[in-house]
Image (tube, rainbow, N blue to C red):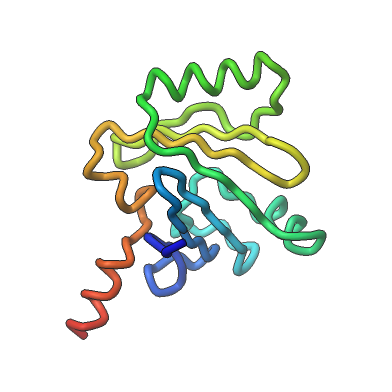
Length: 144
């Protein structure tokens, strides 16, 4: 699976390293904390140092992300999951770009299902705001 986007020290995120791998329309997000900082540079608004560091000390972190979903479908999927007994991790929230909606539910153990919806399909290539595509990073390195 190719790495399609990331958010880490090289992109200005001083809180956690996150890498997005793609398999068809499914995106896998792997995240590991750097420090206990609550810096505004975190690219995942629901990121919580304590829960991620306990994952890391006990096992490993795995979060799934589904793409693409329409906003109404995301809200319905979240509500249906919770109504069927899923533990909510984060209710649907509109991210700072004004185009991305995110919600999370716990699946099992330490696994979190992150639902992501973009108002515009051109935005979804970077996964979430403050994530940078692999192409953008390669081009930036060439310019420097």
